[in-house]
Structures are given as C-alpha cells and as structure tokens.
Length: 334
Image 1 (cartoon, rainbow, N blue to C red):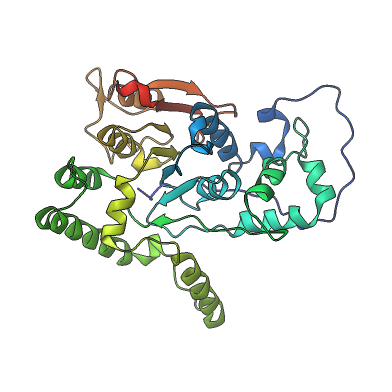
Image 2: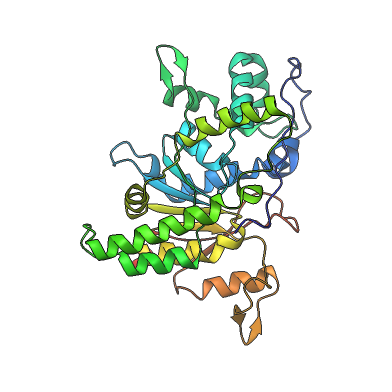
C-alpha cells in the first residue's frame, strides 16, 4: 500500500507578518489563485469541504460521535483537520506513523499572529491559506480556559487490503459478541499484520539516524504519537466495527480495498483514486482489457456497485493528483 507515496509541500510559516495584499481586479477561483491552495498538502482541504457538504451529519450535534476511517492517511493531515477543527473522530489507517508536526507548527504560528492569520484567511487571493480561514472553528472546538488545545487523532497501524477485508468477512456476524473461534481468527490476523509492519522499519518506521541525540528525540516523538495508536487486537476490531464512514484521499494501493471494506460494512464512503499500479493489480480488467490508466480505473471501480456516484473536486488535476471522487450515501444501500 505504501510503495508510491504522495509528496507533501508546505510553505515555511516563520516569516514576519506581511502587509495586506493589494486588491486584485477580480476574485480568482480558489483552485487557481492561491499558491498555498495549489500545494499538494492543501488539496486535502477541498476534500474536507466535500465530505462535510455531502455528509453533514458528521458534525451534527444531535447525533452520536461520527467515526471515520481515513484509509492510507499517511501523515494524517485529513484526520488531524477533521479531529481538531470539526470535532470528528477520524481514525488514521496506515502502516506509517503519522506526523502532524507541520500542521501543528502552522496552527501555532497563526494563533500567535492573528493579523497575519486574518490576511491569509481571505479567499481568492494568492496569500490565501485554508487553515487560516478555519482558525475560528478550531478555537471554538478546542477551547479550554481561554487556551486552544490541539489533540492527536487515533491511529490503526495496519494495511487496508484484501487480507483485511477477507478476514473481516470470516469473523463478522450480526452478533457483536465474538466467540472464541472467530476471536482467534482475528487475533492471528492482527498479530501477523503487526509483525509484517514492525519487521520493515525502513519502509514503515523510517531509517534509523546515526546521530544519537537526534535518534533519542525521534524516539520520544514516536512514543508520544503511539499514545493514540490502537495496538490491542480487540480494540482494533471494535474500532472497525463501530465505523460510520470510510474516506480515502489518494489512498494508492488501498483504493480498491477501501471501497470493498465500505461495501462489506454497508456504510457511506468516498475515495479519490489516483495511482493505478497495474503491475500490482494485474487482474483488474474492464471490457476485457487490463486497467492501465486512470479513466479505466474509475470505470473499473464503478462496477463494484450500481449506485456509486462520481463528482469532480474543485482543484486543478495533474498527472499525480487526480480530482475525481467516487462515493456512496447511506440511502444508496436501500
């Protein structure tokens, strides 16, 4: 799931406060006028807007907390934003350990530089920063004794793949209670999955540093991140069973499995497919031909259910950042 990773780019936020930008002759569309909004990192804000517009119950105060699985969430930007800004319990599912350092640094800068934050909150200009616009919402959801407290979303350190889906099909039943046989199947899967990840620290945990002091700092940071990591087998199972929604923004190799998982659980979902990986998935076919390009991938994925919907997100598509989103609502299962 992780051999092809999106590279995130973020502007440095440590510059001194800037004067307000000169007015432009006309408002520039969000996805064309902002250097920050065009960055790979900030496309995730467009996807967040899509989620909240299509699934408004996620933030409804009248409902119980909504549990989202952020498939192949990587650094964890989407989950951190949903968790801290929208108050949604978004759980990262990824073998890699999330890294929220850049988002936290940007947030702290904006909180301590309100005038600069106000400038960056203005849409339609080249200085726009989506995080700055959401700052008031973040303050409201994380206020304690006048202070803004940021927290870390939960993390399932696992692959979302065919093995997961097939294992769940073996252990799930209408009865939430797991008997000893089914619990044994799940425990065996979870132990094997944990060993699979921990045995490959170069890919999933980073290459150890030769600098001892740097390595010690890294270990402390990793320990803090692991506080939110769900490591217990039964807790992992219960978390998956409690899911209300599955999301995947460019989830790479996990794309198809994320959809299969949602269809099996019969819960709403949305996925933004990107890379194809034809060598890793040689059995994907559409109209008798192997799936080798993005349009074929979209067509292939849409064959999984007759009511799969398709829309285009409002950012500029590139060769490595596709903007077509596939999704299903709760009523589509009726």
